Length: 259
Image 1 (cartoon, rainbow, N blue to C red):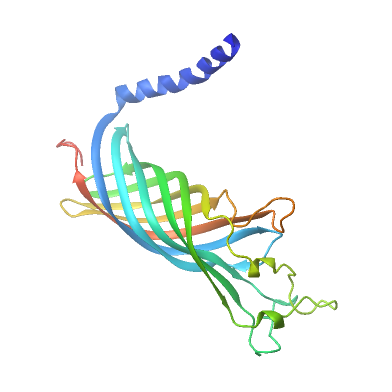
Image 2: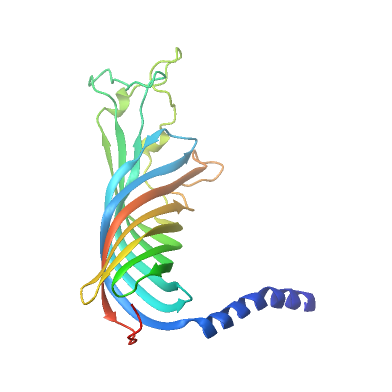
């Protein structure tokens, strides 16, 4: 027990030292901003066994909150939280071994399949920025956990399920025999993972803050069950988001030296 305490203290001391240094060097801020965001979402699902896919396209939008607490040397430290409505999913790439579209015998059209899902996504991100705070340009990076709550799903397909083109023994037809996902509904209603992004912020005095950002999300959970008895060992959401955000200040630090 004594050894464990010493080990814990030796692990904790460097972080205490960093906290003390920040308290001594950092310049206090108390800026609270709110606003809204919107953009494009490009997503897929990491299936195992693998399913050939193109990027699924959808929209995202919601509300943004930001609290700026400190400027440490040149780094502006803040916490960002959002509540977003997001359209995600997967779009299957149905091709022959010659990379040609698979033509359905019943419809005469190239087979296509897409699953659209909607989520309420809540990211909470630690943010670091470098540049101007009140008027001018600032570069920023941010990262943190994200939780998603499943809302609905819809299937888009242009062929009858019973007449889909299979994988033939002679190598023609589809290249992939993995089709179980096409008839499965989302089984796990809560998604979670890690989000990280970077971007630029343009601030105008008495107007607000305009942000453009690219963000990547990697899901740590699965949309389908993944026990040894289940078909898929993995089915995690991944997406890239390009968004615009507008924030206006509710409270600002009273300091004439802040630029």
